[in-house]
Image 1: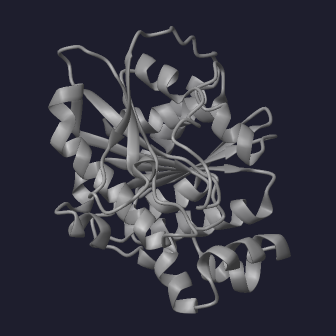
Image 2 (image 1 turned 45 degrees about the horizontal axis):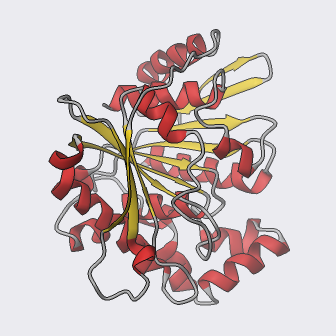
Amino acid sequence: MKYCAIQASTDELILTRRQLRAFCGLAFLLFASTLAAAETETTPYEITRDIYYGDETVADRNLQSLDVYWQNKQQKLPVIIYVHGGGWAFGDKAEIHRKPDYFLSQGIAVVSMNYRLRWDYRIFDQAEDVASVVVWIKNNAETYGLDAGKIILMGHAAGAHLVSLVATNPNYLKAAGLSLRDITSVVAIDTASFDINRLMIELGSFVERRQHQLIFGNDEEVWKQSSPIHHVSSGKSILSFAIIYVAQDEETKLQAMGFAKKLSTADIEAIMIPGNEKTTQSINEELGKTGDVSTHALMAFIRAKI
């Protein structure tokens, strides 16, 4: 596995890429981008809330609803599907913080989605909901000025786990009539759940293991099927990943490194973006903040994909 690393002051950026030249070329751009603060101008945009994307079988329609942050203009915009965190059992699509303001200022629309929550539904149902929103965008792109050929999956914590699962196990998109090639790239923001088996057996603290046991149970096969890392292999058309993690959290750091290594071994592009002196809350809430190093690095990654 090859690395290209840059350290600027206390801010460190480690890139894992298929080709060393590509690693270092993008790394240089990322390093340069941290030398100046980003000036984000407020961009007018539309918000269409509480659109139902479900299949009429769920009693609480809010669990399968989404908000679209978009611009009414002729040019079609790439779109980010954002999946909130909350331990798979809590959270809401409204918890999106700076992302619409920032990404729309960069010419990227945002769709923030709700999904069916534990305890009434399975992890696999939640992954199906992510795939359903990809279908919804394909079917409604014209209405909201979206470029259906440039869809980025992004999630935080539990949401990062879900987008990673959908992006590595092709069965979810296949069941929805799509394929992994219908997404452009993936952004996973601070999750310790790339490899649930390893977390439960080796890495996790007592609290982390207990939380995951409540969600994923005791069946090791369920752990495996729920773990994005176990679905990674070459020849599956898995797309590029940006993995953002809290640098001071050993569990999420080791999970991020292990997942990036597995992707690299399968010849799949990945970059690792450490958030120094951040928490799992602040690393997500500050994405899009002026001068934020993680934002600069992520935006360089996204620009290369769209």
